[in-house]
Image 1 (cartoon, rainbow, N blue to C red):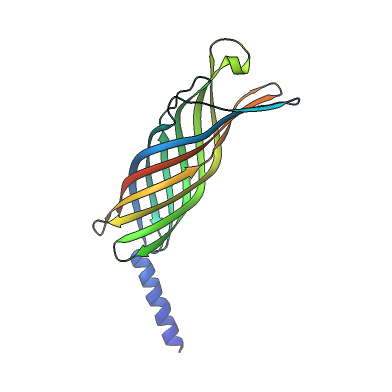
Image 2: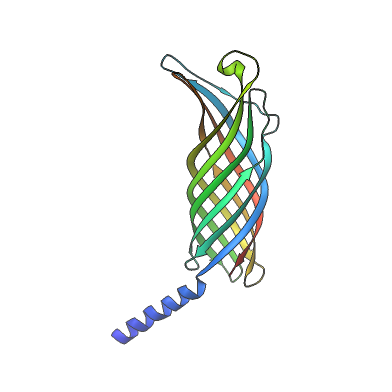
Length: 204
């Protein structure tokens, strides 16, 4: 009985090690920015308004890498970003993020997988804010701010070869950034970011 138990454990370990492997990849797609809002908070009043941008879509891209522990569980890190958004009151410069996410995979046959990811993203953006909002003067003031926010993803991948796979993915985050602090006043900007992308990965 004990010998059978150890044999089962050894077989499971061997199967897990057979599926364990590092991987790298890259993807490109389109990011959509919804519900972009700005707010001003102070000791005496709070005010918020929806911010309009000329185009709420921008190019997105990332490079990623991870380690597959078995056919169901991986850990993935990524560096990526979104192109700038132009607005009349607030212009958002290039946005960058660094993320770490556990990844759960559901194999469907030999070549097709579904996956879900959830983790944290270190998000940075540069803002050019109209002085009419901050001080009532003309011109603009530039700020750079970072925050930590949740990053979630769903997708599917198809194995073209043993090592190379094609993937499609949807990702979502909702960062809130403190754009400026003037005395007791604090200006924040928040947006929902959804990104659809197509990419390739290589498993070693």
